Length: 486
Ligand code: TRP
Image (cartoon, rainbow, N blue to C red; front, side):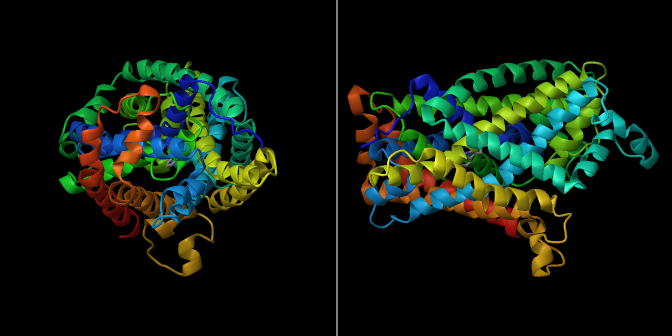
């Protein structure tokens, strides 16, 4: 029978896992959530949750994946009687996430192109919108984005380019594609981010961004948000952000764990992934927020407006070097997005490839990656054509809802609500139930202690997985449902 090939080295595994974790969530979600939810307080809550819930679920997923050596559907099938079906949740959520993730990845590629245009004074740069912006009294960034949203065909083309790139890497296999790309891409991303931070923090006025981030109450005192969220809201916002950012609750880490060698240390790797992901989220905030407060003090702080209007304004107003920093920044966002989208696609592909191999059909990776990517393309086209709800066929339009909540406002939010809002917290919650109350925590311990490794945090793990993590996840579920549906 064909051999199931895994990661070539522990470093490769680590970079791939960090790549999966570091994504749009870090660069886009974290900075704003931190500022709007109490600055430093949010950071502390986030880190505590990352250790008490994130790390716990992370080592659990990695261990279950490696123990079974299978994709997420088969892994649950082997492990559990009651939760056999849970693996399907773990495959469907990445599928739905890919719909909007690829659309947004495409937007980021478009913005690399825009800034290349500015570098050479070409007609596809943002500078071409100077007259329109002046006439309308808007900003360059706003005009660029409006024009882009008014042209769904262009958005679809960029989205499909992003799907194609993701597909090509996954076709290359785990060690030949994913590991290779992430081993180079992640260190490069880190360096690029450092350069962007130095530039952003040395802009005049950048200090307000740091105050918004760190000083509790500053955002309210300066009228940036109306009132401070209560502690429960901060907890659930931080929890939801943390889970999405660590790629948990969707079979991604189970799948990557299944490719990890038996002698590698899961506890150490899990901790490193959590630490590195948090560091990059924090670093992204140090780049995005000071930039915004220095050069576009009235710009959007969240949502698509932050990444595609405010940040573009920042680069357009930076002077001669602006386009260069724009290219660097959007390229690093593309890197972050691709290293995540390949993990999402791999969850789906791994399952079908394993099944075919077990049935003696040989290595079907290329064919199945192509089929999965084609299916993802359809969802991506829908999200791009919808142009953030500007179309006449958003969920609210189709259902005749006059004042839609977030889930119905546009197709991007719809898929986000289904996956990140419901399926992810539910999947993670049921997984902790399964480990704690059905199969037992010794299963995880035995797997982690393979080849002489020690699970020194086992006692901590035991308490957290029984009581703390389920409670935290219930809270996240509540917060997500409130955010998307009420
Ligand atoms: N972690 C990624 C981000 O922060 C998103 C992501 C990638 C993800 N793979 C995942 C989320 C698997 C959940 C499950 O943007």
